[in-house]
Image (tube, rainbow, N blue to C red; front, top):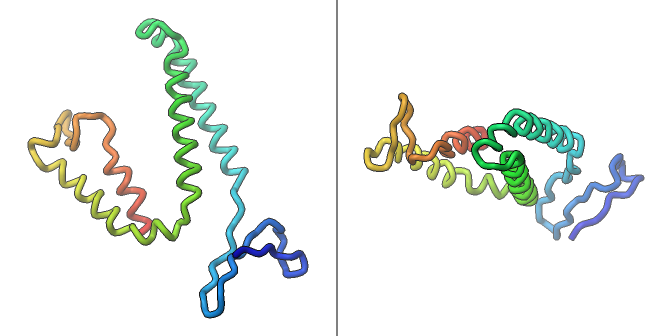
Length: 149
């Protein structure tokens, strides 16, 4: 199903892979390699941020939780979860997201409408949330999905 490009076929990157389809089927674009520099730069910025959180909250963690590394462990746990999610989302072809963009947008708008229902929403200091939790994913999802449509 896949064939490697040879050096004499005009490929400057030998590891690119081109899908090979049967007669009459459309071929897709060449898959780009993983951008290592962008990943390493982002990971370094995240690690610097975790170091900053640790250095500013170690005394607070010691006073409230009895462990100076409480927030460091918590941040590293969420970093691990985020890296697993990154790998999972990276493995899914982006064209699959395009097929489901309208149902995803409908779901996000439905979640936004939940904030207008009095029994399900919570208002505090001028903001209305659809749950009593501090983090509300609907706005973030909308910012991600709208450019995709």
